[in-house]
Image (tube, rainbow, N blue to C red; front, side, top):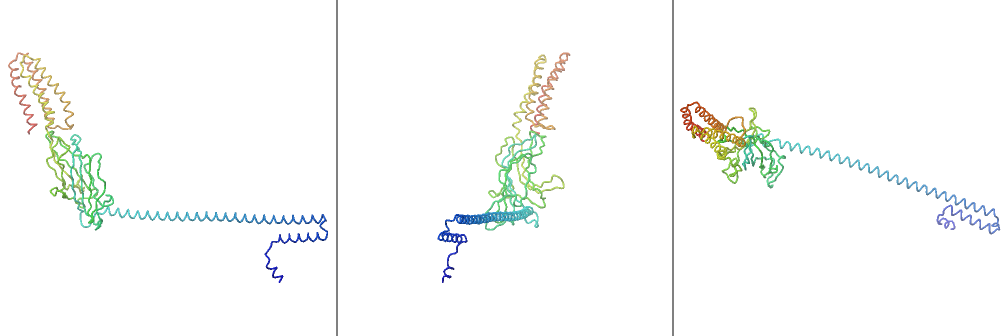
Length: 431
């Protein structure tokens, strides 16, 4: 029974048992009278010190082990976190790289598919692709005949069918021009810079009909032959071509304007910013472009014929020249004795004509060949100088006592000079 009770006691440490034994021993020694022995006291104190020392060492050992275990645990935990972090970062990087490569492959595939779609004509196996066009000449800002060009504002509308873009039941949508097949318009006779006013997009209807609108403002080169200037008329052309497509692959056909079915292919504005020209006729036509004999690209164009108004040049050029010529011929109506007056009038006419020539130089185009206006100006100049020569010659005959000859020269000049200029002026105005 006592044994059972002993076994149920709580477990105690070794140090506690030793202390209890020492206390019992000291108590026994005190009871026997040995407690007064100094050596015994010393022994007990040493024993207690020895026990304390062992306890301290053991506690230090336990603390050191615990500190080492905690340090090792923290280091291991930190190392584990670092390892896991690196592994996670590497895994994420690999996933990102793989996703990027897949995205690049998909983008390349989509780009190739789009390039094929934009490069292949709609139903190209069935023959040439038909594209209807409308071209409107909104305004003509200027015609520079000396530099052989004109400035104009042009509106163009193209329509074609591409069944690959059909989406029955869907609304009309707009997409960028470069994402679908298009004729790739090029202005053939463009010179200098060109500006466009509308965005580069196309409208796609549910049945696959594609519509493209654009407005161009540019200078267009035009070869002009000004032999008849200023009584000249010319044909001007705005020409478009499909880059990379021959006339056998692409066919431009004039379209019909929905608001006015009488307009086929295009039209020109009723009022233009062009005061010195009159539009006679115009037409929008299919016009293949062939710069050389072996090249014939598909294209279309707008042509108009314009006639120059001559009234400005009549007042600014012809009238002053006529006044000078008439003034020089007036010298023949003075008496031969008034030699100073006659020569003075002829000389003044020459000087006036020279001054007038400087003014004419700013009004006439600079060309390497003679125009109708040049012939009139040169003819008037020759008549004025001839009048001066005849006046001097008549005075010379008077000094040689040949009055009869001098009189005949004066009388003939009074008729021949006006007749010659009238013939020149009639040719300039009417022939």
